[in-house]
Length: 112
Image (cartoon, rainbow, N blue to C red; front, side, top):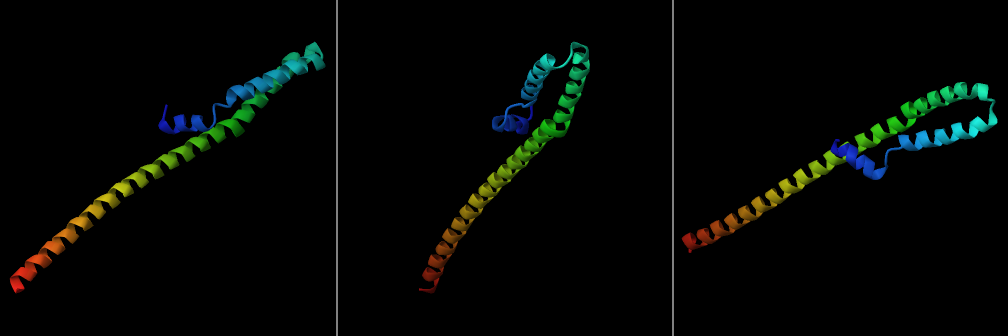
């Protein structure tokens, strides 16, 4: 499982089991309302609807959330790289300032 997938699941657990459960409850409730001779046809229609909901809804949303998590992770990595570069540049500036100060002292001694 990718890091982006794990992170996406931290934001929102898998929704397909909940979709299956909701439609399962609907199927159960409809069995009481429709003639028994139509149960199989109704169940087939509901199963097709479940797949459409998943294909056009939950699976697309999960993919988008994973993509957003991947983008976030890349941005965080870039931020960390830039923070490290900034620390290195600040250390280099400090070293150069120290070198300038040393050279100024040396210059004073030579010209004194």
